[in-house]
Structure formats: C-alpha cells, structure tokens
Image 1 (tube, rainbow, N blue to C red):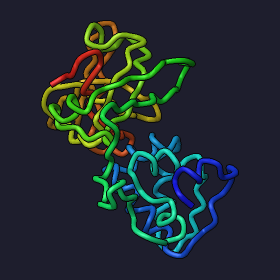
Image 2: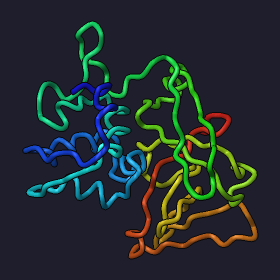
Image 3: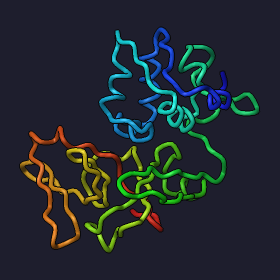
Image 4: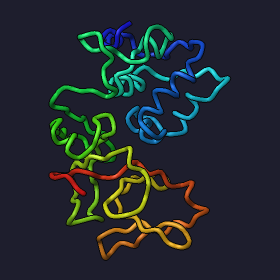
Length: 229
C-alpha cells in the first residue's frame, strides 16, 4: 500500500496493528510537538496523545493521518503494517531527506472560524534554506482580527514555524489559549507570561505560572508577505 494508493482507500477507521502506538510516536515526533502535529492532522492535541499511549488500541482516521504522512515522507506501509522502511526512498534508491519536497513548495492553509476561502501560500526552496526552515515545519493560518495591526491585518495568511515553540525574544507567536487561536507577542514576567497585542483598545492577557496548562504554543510566525526575523 503506497502513499499514492492510500489516497484511494475508502475513508474509515484504520485497522489496529501491533506496535502502532510506537510507530505513531515516530510520526508525531517528526513535527516537534503534539500540538503542531494535531493542527496538521485536524484534531486536538489530546487526540494525538491518545494515539501514542502504550498498551492501547489507537484507531485514528485515515483522513487525519494522511496529511502527517504526506508532509513527513513516511511510508504508509511501515506506519500501518510495520513493513519495510519508515521513510520512502528517492528515485535513485537513496533514502529521501525527511520532509523533502519539490523545488517549489505549496502550503495549503488551515481553514477555521468564518474564513471559507483563504487561498494558499507558496515559497521557494531558496527562501526556505536562507531562513533555515524545513518544509515540514511550516503551517499556515489566517489572521481573523486586528489585534496585531499594523504588523498583521485581518485576512493575512501567515506561515508559522512549528519547530520554534520556545517563548521569548522578539517576534510574534501563534498560540492557542483556552481553545482560542491568537497571534501575540510574548513577554515573560516574574509571575508567568503576558500575551501582548498592538491594539490599544484590547487588554493584554496575563497568564500566571499555574495557568500555563491552558496555553499551547503553535509556533513562531515567520512570514506574511515577507520573512519576519
């Protein structure tokens, strides 16, 4: 069952195979965090966590696994059946570099909220290399409010480096706080973290250390219509 063939498989539950949680862990770890993998798969982080629990029988949906498999270059045969090598090989028989993509890599943005058609973003391999970003590390989001204007405006499509989840320093991060996705600058304080916005009419969000469980860092925003340092 090649990745191409798997696209024709009737959508439904994946049959449980011995060692599947361990192989799913390899797939999830490819994206750095459960949150990053969850957003690519279209599920929540708790669901991804259940897939990788040992001594369980995970039963993820094929439609949720495919985006992860396609972005990682992993073999569906290995993931589902434990057969062959973990990653697909290149045309010359050599192991393809993880996440390797054609010279021009197109990112299909996630759609959420009231956004029904947000188009797509494209970047070149040269842009990725010059900014030290691997294709599989990127996710796309639509900005739905003006809290970070003029840096980010409603309708902007932003690319997020999901490997950069360590808060601090300059730049704007995409985060999820209590189920709400937000683009915010981040400031560390003696008591926790403050999510800063540019709009004077909006309040900053202060998160104490004991409230950090409600915060998920999706990654650092690296591009809107330009690369952001």
